[in-house]
View: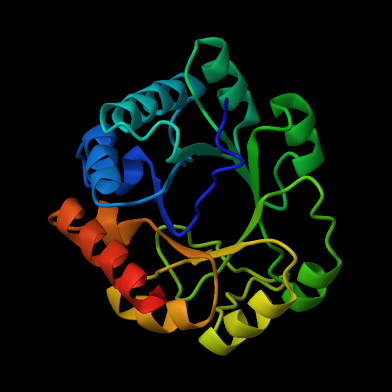
Length: 233
């Protein structure tokens, strides 16, 4: 029923109402999917639970309108409760993405079932040791970053001392070799980053402002997807 078996994190769009410069989220998601993006995550730190449910419904409808319900995955950041409530209302949500301080992946898996997607943001501190030793039995991919410092998520990559640790392409190349599960990378990623990022061997990239903050989101999404596909061909 859900897209765990067909999960494709190669082109991954993360979006919430605070990212779109006042423009509606759902039409933007539809444009991004039409441009070839394969995974959508609804993420907002300002929306209420009910607003997140409505956003999730609109996103699911946008995916369905493009005929991609069975191939494009829809996730919600952090909020297991929103995923469960949305499903109760008949909304097709494929899973959840959680961070290190959110509800543990094994609990998400217990509530969502074996056919759902559970993604996890990898630890910032001691990243390489963590990737090698982490229990990945309940998760489908690691989210890693940032490549650059980003205002979209200022706490991304913070270590225990409050410093932002960015990830070099050399870091990512090394990371891919030791990770037992797929890796998607983001955090300030722009079009110019796609060729060297593709060469690292990571499974995909995620973006927020590169699309949501663009004058023409569909044009930018198309450029990102096309460049990624060309570099990975």
